[in-house]
Image (cartoon, rainbow, N blue to C red; front, top):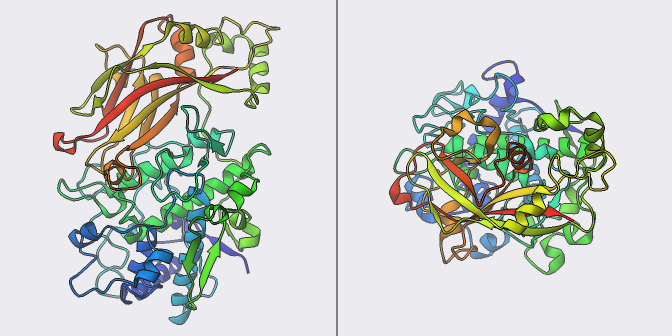
Length: 511
């Protein structure tokens, strides 16, 4: 049987049968003790576990018995982030969870073909929290199992939605699944790692929209983060699963968009961490057995037995507008389009850095990157109009990347817009074409802790700024010693959160 995952907003009503049965399945899982591998909280612990935060949010009581050490070693704190394992691990996690919920639904007399809905917040009119998740009551009486009090939304006022100006689908334009960790693109799916429960550099789709939706939906109340805001509690929110179903759907759509979009085929990715002698990906099944899987085993939806009601062959962000000089030369645009594949001899070079760490305090943080004159000339030599004349052998565009390195802090709610090339005396909002991107450092507190996987190094985000630098060059604004960088927080960042960027850097990627 092929199960079809439906759009939650298109089920026919607030409590349409598929969402009502989902709530009943969740309620049944909630009734089981934490120590039971198919219980609601056990499955959340597979994604991550923070004893103190679970207690503070009311998910761990004094009478609760934790799972055995053996079960926790096999299953818990397993989610893959900042890694090329991010997408395949979460696909396996969704599949296993869906099977457990379906088993509960069938046991209760529900449909055997039930499938997990997805939340397509990018579709017009569907960026609000689905209504069944927003109210404490439900048709079966008592407390709605889909309602989470600690779900605060972008403004922290309990109004939950995904602001479309803070999320994007730029990742769908990434050419390669696997990226690099030395300053250039981390790729659509992430960088080559082994087992990475809390990796440092997220891939494009993980960064946007995945991380941003987590932080915007969860928010905080000024004291505690929302459940969705922190990796170690996110799986406790029923809407987590619908969000990840959409991320999984976007992965499949990226693969269908063009023949050049391919998952890795080598054994290093396909065999997963277990192929390197590291921890295997493992999930509890409804019958009490364990499903162990590898990335290579979860790439084909037909084999896995599910699909989506709306799975177009291409979901892509509109490419940035070409500068006016290039648009006037269609023959150059054609050469550029034909030069999309990254040359094999591509390498990465540092163009410039900020003079030091950048504290994220206030509503508008001004910094700058000191540009190395020689590296700047290398970049501009491959930007319009220098070597883009007809017949030039160097028609392939330079790629330029802004890195926000080693972001650290004590707030899981931090998120901000990043602008490049906006003068210090100007309002960044007046320069939408210079918005490099919006980032949300999902899991920031844990990444900043010296006793955790990152050893306190924090998180690093990479934003491609090729089009911005190209336009700055055309406007004679790139031939400078320093390039302004503005960081505008999305919502207030309290001083006690101690959020900072260790270094802002610019890298070029070319021949």
